[in-house]
Length: 387
Image (cartoon, rainbow, N blue to C red; front, top):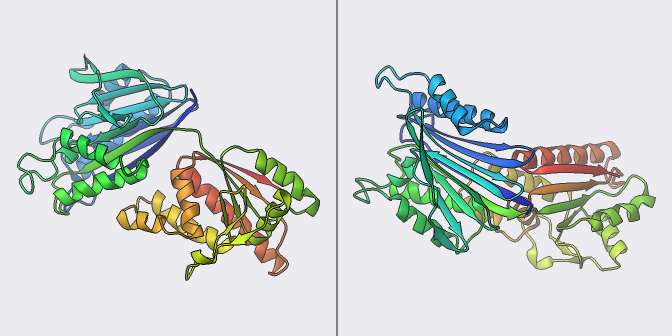
């Protein structure tokens, strides 16, 4: 089994606090993906320091193959002692998914992870053991395609306590809501936004504690290939298209000249979608055999704005409304956010004679560099092939 994961998280700061006392660390190794959620004792600066140290220590040690025993021992000996409570304390959850389909979940004092498998809530058969005086629960397992794991800090289960709900949301109520949400979306980022918004609403937009949700979804490898810009040598048109079409997965063409090259190779017409006109995004087109055909520079720039919002964690209901719009920029951004684990860019280095030659090529190369950077920040591998 060759699996990938989609990981998304969102934190709400305790009301009136500048810093969040929860910290999430996402790490990619050669053979696995690791999600770590740490919750520092208290709130504000002290909690932030405890959570950051805990997540960084766990991340570094797991990345280098250390055991949970060594990691917990290091945390206990490293965390600064609170001068008021006379203890050093941070809870944590660690989920490690290996590319071969093996999984490892270990938790200390955080609410129990929610697992949704085959559209059902699953009980996790944890084993318990004591390490450095701490009750650690862990589970080693084989993943199934489509598995969805929800890690959370205790701010989630206390949402609404004393306000809308007497005893807070509770872990089981949150799990049922997550299952309900999964009937409308399988996207980790959308599920994260929905769960975080529910917490914020229960707190009446004044969170009584730092509140973090981290969703990990097991998905197959998804390659997206984008062709933009004609080759420097027109004789390479066919070579580029042969290589582009040989790739598996989703295929996107950006740019009018690129679309004409693709249409000629496929012997199919370019059909402009007049009905999808937008005031600020050029219309899309259709070519049989392509998943998406858009204009070039303007559309890619607007897609980049959405991608930057995503990596800056500026993700809410309004963001997804924009992502669902029927225009080329939104469609391109949506593919890269929700349908991509690897991106392959086929970039032509010819200049558009309709523009200043140097400016046109510089714009395209700068745009490609920005796209590569933001998609890598999303955790995806990016390869660029120039022609």
